[in-house]
View (spheres, rainbow, N blue to C red):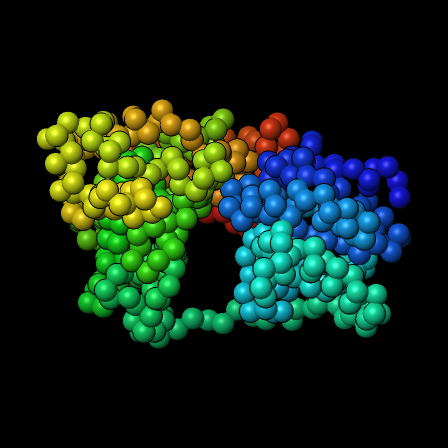
Length: 457
């Protein structure tokens, strides 16, 4: 094996996610034609591990199985291991995600797929622990089982193919009716498990309401927007929203903040304000803009995301003890604060309080005071990778906000962002996909071009 493939080669990657794995004892490589050609020539099976910089369970695997000397030694001997940033290579991510979903019915990240030297997927899994516990096998055990399977049946492994299908034309009337079947009337949102902000569904309902009043659609849209705004999905101090809530009641979020969610939520709340005239939706939209400007901006554009963890502890930046609140606020301020927020000595998350509103009272002065105190804490790391498509989507959201909120300065900001994106990503003939640490990734995707066309038209 050439020396190049007997060491970890991620240290100078253009991906912050890949650099996070540069210290692993596994001989990680980047996905490129040279590495794939070597694997085929050497008849070396592959482990392709896909994730992204702010992925909580990616961090856990990096610290556990991927830092374990025994696991690393086995992988280094039996596989050529490749790390992929799903945000830099959405094409690879999508293909492997389709495979795991076909194999198991679900998917997620980290997405770990074992493949033959000829790139036929064999087995896929998400997180696996360092040690086997009960029926949950360790990553090393799984890798050993895959090796045995490939040695015995490798010649019979069939390629994974996907049949191209034309997207069905949605019946808007039927879609509107079917949403009612999944609507959580008690809590807002849809379904009875984890609650993700249903961005596209919200925009569908809102634009339909803009041309045709509908009592049920109005209830579903406004109750969902209210739950997202009032409860745990919302960062009530800084503005912006977290990735999703782990419970049906929208109480405790997964604390990751993503640019995509900010852009889509800004779009939804701006349109909702125009349709309903409810001032609280305007306030929510303005706070999202503040979150973008105060925390996401980088070189005239926007970074991709913030980690859910701070100093290896989930949500640490955002949580409060009642004792800490009492020390920061006067007795009168604390009383006013507790009239608006549901906080207690026992808390709602590991003995601490994640802020959830119980009323829509305005206490801007107290919230600003707590935000200033929070800024003195350790902060979650930011993924400074700049993605063209997500930034173009943010420009579209700013245009919509400017028009719906009657804020021409937001349209001007969108124009400035769009010009900055063209300066950075357009070379006169094609659009690049991502930019990080002075390096422009020379990879083009149709989705980036589509988002840019939407932003400039």
